[in-house]
Amino acid sequence: MRQRVITAVVALVIFIPILYVGGIAVEIAAAVLAGIGVYELFRMKGLAILSFEGVLSILGAVFLVLPAERWMPFLSGNNSNFLLFYLTVMIILGFSVVSKNTYTIDEAGFPVITSLYVGVGFQNLVTARDSGLAILLFAFFVVWATDIGAYMVGRQIGKRKLWPEISPNKTIEGALGGIASAVVVAVIFFLVQPQVFQHNLVTMIIFTIVFSIVGQFGDLVESAIKRHYDVKDSGNILPGHGGILDRFDSMLFVFPMMHLLGVF
Image (cartoon, rainbow, N blue to C red; front, side, top):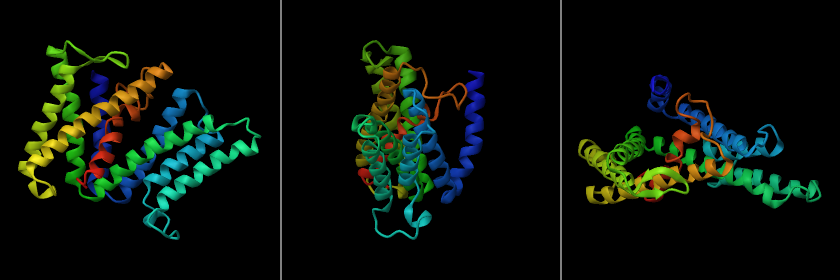
């Protein structure tokens, strides 16, 4: 527990100023986190990150994260980020030709989906911060409230397993407690900062329920990946907390959903 607290404090001391400054600082941080996330997935699968597919997968994620208009102004078009990502996909797929099909589309699927999964999630973190610090904090608070509420309620009254084949400790009662906690936090946030949102309170409560469910599902997805590769944590970069994906698994699902529903 002491190690977890120390790691959390150090991470917040580093992360909070970056979030406050925004702009390039957040973009660089998100790109670094995306690269580490790709590395963690390759590590779980037992692949070398310094392979051609590892490097291209990191590039693909970074291409998705960094706004092209700022980092690649020589490019034109609104879809530059996606097209640069697709360039890495084409190169990875092209290796099946160069290797005379010893490297197949099945093998190419892993680096592609890895960079897409991690890249789009952190891309939307950047977009959320560009919409304002309050929106970004709202997303974090909803995810944290869900995690804390699910843990506390599940520990006290949890009896019915939510998805034992994937995460045996999670319960239905805990999941509902997480949703309730997220709604309480969202209502408080809305009452304190109503000008931040483009929607009314009832709509935001409904959206928050969706975000909480989606966040918990993102957590289960990462649990399924770890169970598939038979690892406890995605990495060890955060002592006591695991890896970057262990900390951002819910947010990689919540940020895109928030963007889709027009919260930012």
